[in-house]
Length: 115
Image (cartoon, rainbow, N blue to C red; front, top):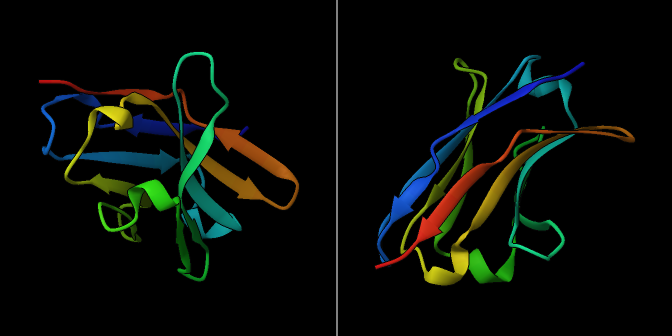
């Protein structure tokens, strides 16, 4: 069973920054892609950013230019760097690892953007 260890959430003021980390129990190169999703109460999980094993990235329109997904191969970790945060970015953020038809999820980390 693949496990994903997330960290980095917290409370930040509008305009601030946070960096989330996700470290899987297997090599990040064993997955077709890794991604970050977020969910607000009563809503479905929405894709925020995605990176394929080849390094191609994709972002939701609402975060383009503000969020960056990246990875550190030596640390076997995927990151989500979030800048210029807005109150609408408040959500629980989840890391996902995908291999063919299987998805594994992290436990989620709360991000709250508030004055």
